[in-house]
Length: 270
Picture 1: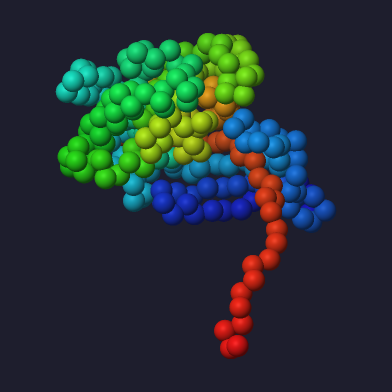
Picture 2: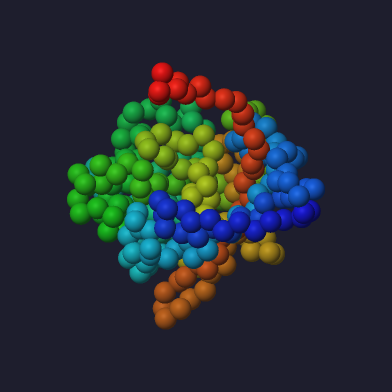
């Protein structure tokens, strides 16, 4: 009646189980709250999510193991661009992590700094396609071009102060990592939920690029800065038979009723 209700969810597109803790009040779902999620316009009720085995290999968009090449980092030889060090990971959604400086970025970039520049977006897409082939998600770069939704490419950098897209100042000491992600071409305005799971998972595995660049909190969580603000995520990882496995990734999202109304359907008998 009051507290948290456990809801078990199957996310079909990535073939994963999610356990949601939904706030309850007086026997009803709490639809409003003061939990603020940067990138979402209004505060709402907090829903705590646990992604179980986010790096397992059941998902239809997965390339297999959580680290498909078996390495925490790989070098991609990209024609016209050069050698790019990357962490290739299947967690949440297949993601290619690269250091911001390897792309000539600072890590504090916002959408207007990148999205108007077709040459930058073309360079990012070329790297993404090569990463897709290296992960076993596509046989050729041409095949990778047909699946723009996966893998994602994210660039990360050590924490530093920056100004978010709404003009708020994000202090260096309030974050442990900077992260940006490209989604279906352009730079995302915040961070995708599956991208946050990938960040948490990568930080939890020693030697990955996000792990090398991030600070972690005593509870294992990492606070990362994205274009719209900050987000706290965490993951639990262990090594099994020489392979890293993430058993759980944790984060919070917000939820509230958006609208209510009626749909007018004509009577088919008239």
